[in-house]
Image (cartoon, rainbow, N blue to C red; front, side, top):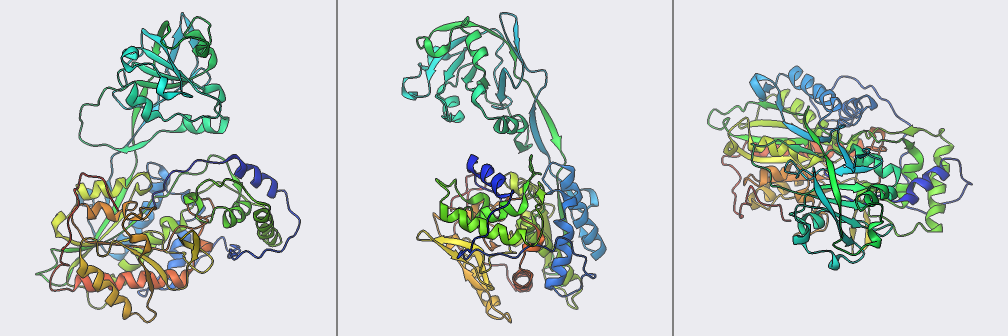
Length: 577
């Protein structure tokens, strides 16, 4: 699941450090108890035609193993994960539907990394990358700074009083920032759109952890057809020494706004790099010659997020999140950690310490996100391959890469489908379906937490394009041996989490293809190193996978494609829930 951005908080790391050293026993009345997670490895028997908890467990412990290192798109780890899926679909005998007769569709992901020869000099004095200045990428159209004159633009403490944009045209405009204040880069880019560069005099006050993150930051994008890049100002954080040097040794804040400084020489260079990423695409041909040219698509995303730059104590993190961050990375920064919360955290951690010693962990395994979806789709494929009768329509299985980077793999696939796009009658997307039990906070209603259940599942988008598809899904569910309890709260228009826009199904919906997204909610392990396969509820997980399998069967056997009776989105517009 693609995440929303929240800032990090210093108290978090400090608290983990303290709790990792041991805590006094305390009794907790918290409802957020959880499986202990002692079962860190599992090797089951060969999978079967039936979709069972054991088969799903066998697969997930392989796909979300530490050896996969999170499967981040654009890394060798993602290739390792997709290689496992490819081996399995090849073994099952599915038809390859990727590039050049293979199961892989290569997705052209690119990144722009800071060139190590970037430099800034003032009057012959050279300032070093990271200690003197730190650039941020404003795109391929960034202006050159060579020979541009510095000018003091004012303090961000009074943004309404910054110098007129015209006075900054073609110059390096220097902005001072009060300690602890954040500067919205996009706002400054828009205000000083004609400047040669924008220099924020705050580098000395950026914490080392954040500095390391900024240095490593290299946004990954989907390479599209070449188009002229709009001209933009270069952007950099600068040290106090560099800021003073721009004005002959004077601190900019002591100068009048609009004061001109020295000429700035050098360059802020970026290098474009192509990254390894691929969708896995396979087909099971339908049995009816008059319908096999149409497809029911089933999808999940094969990627997760990168290995964490610094390990943390696994159990301390899980105990902390159970109480303070019940939605993991989706939880906003808490204003304060109360004493009652500390008691709860210590009680949970103490119970885990009685089971095992501390464990340093830095691998974001992505067991639920989206190991459950990926292995669920694989189990559905195996079930259909081994069934006595095939569905009338063909089934299109797509494991998308780059979902965590902004739905990049599904965006690329739907723009460059390997079957005719209008032959796809429905897309069923599975993302995070292994949790949502009574110990997982599934949602928040009226400011109060709502916990899941053994039959809980969120159904999103089922009627946004086709009323008929939504009705069919409910009908199939009623016929299950244990019908699931559908929750539509997260599908409401204007719902704050905007999940309809945050997973791969939307890339199909934007082209008018009816979709349904199955989801059991975010939880304390969402985008955390604690998202490991031992915390999955396998019976619950299997119920949902079997339901999706039966829905695919029903849609594939319809005499007609699901009727689209709702307005289609603009394929190039922004998603609105």
